[in-house]
Amino acid sequence: MTRKILKNKPILEAIFELRWKLQEYVSRIKTDPHYKLIIGRLYDKLKDEYPFHEQLSAAALPDEIAGYLVQHRFRKDKGKWPLVQIGPGIITVNDTKGYAWEDFKGRIAQTVNTLFEVYPESKNSLEVNRLLLRYIDGITFNFQKNNLFDFLEKQMKTKINLYQHLFEDTGVEKLPLALDLKFSFASKEPKGAINLRFVRGKIKESDALIWETIVESIPEDTPKDQNRITRWVEKAHSLADDWFFKLIEGELLRRFE
Image 1 (cartoon, one colour):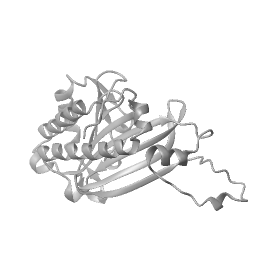
Image 2: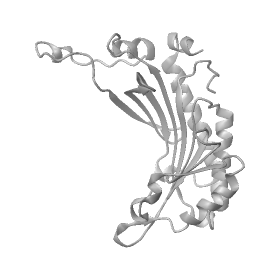
Image 3: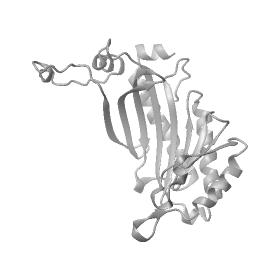
């Protein structure tokens, strides 16, 4: 299944993340000896597509505590999306409202292939140990006027039933001031896990219900080469899309069309 083109799509961000194994040295410090070399090489290959470079605050951190933190960002233009981020042991591709699957898939393939191309002796030294495809969707929601649990049950087929006697004779209001519900399930295609999360958050300045659909690999089953990584991404997208449309099927889908 492919995510339909929705006129009022709720997507806030789409993220692909690839991690590779860092080398462990004395005092259990984990670093990538090739990292500083590949930053420049990667930018040279991607600058036609992502010419605007940003150095993030994490770039000032010492190597021994910088593992898996993004430090550099390559954008289409200042403040523009999509973008690519890199740090020691991690590279990501991110997009937002302009997201379209075929375009995003192509950007992922380009970024992965470029990483393997610029990484020294990649077949022997680049050990991929985690893949993740994450969708963050959200809608504005008035938590004071609307019952969140009724909305989740009626609009998103997700029933959460707190024991109602908890609120009796206690002076505790039923309105949740915060919300963070996360579920994780093993998946076969692709092999790994799918996570679903509901949180109370913000869209610009408005209260919002945010939900995340995350498909991730597990280290021992993470694909190691470009072709298998591409196939994993396609399977992860199919699974995430399936869950997305099943959750919003009905009135909520019509609201987004």
